[in-house]
Length: 121
Image 1 (spheres, one colour):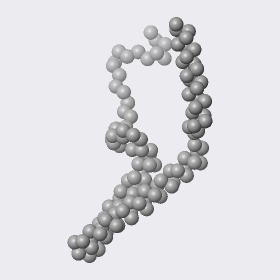
Image 2 (cartoon, helix red, strand yellow; image 1 turned 180 degrees about the vertical axis):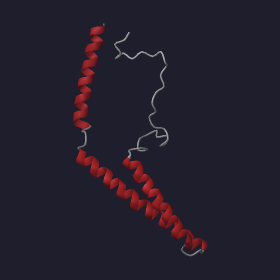
Image 3 (tube, helix red, strand yellow; image 1 turned 90 degrees about the horizontal axis):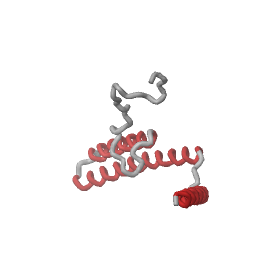
Image 4 (cartoon, helix red, strand yellow; image 1 turned 90 degrees about the vertical axis):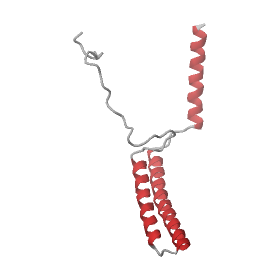
């Protein structure tokens, strides 16, 4: 029975590799760089336009002059640079992102932990 399971597992791995090769090709470094640059540019322009448009419409509605336009344009610029920062460090772009504060932390070990690489047993 284990031989059949091992054989099935090997065939499934081979089929998965063939599928990945055909349908999920890895992008080149150039493509990844172009993708990141285009995304950063879109974030910059989109955030500035969004903030400016919201400020302009609020100014027209509340008749406050350019005050809200300038405030929301500055908020759009701050948002744009924050999003570009997140793109640059590759944070917050995956499903289930919980925040920038949750980075990898060194694990605490018990004082009587023995490393397998230690030769002093």
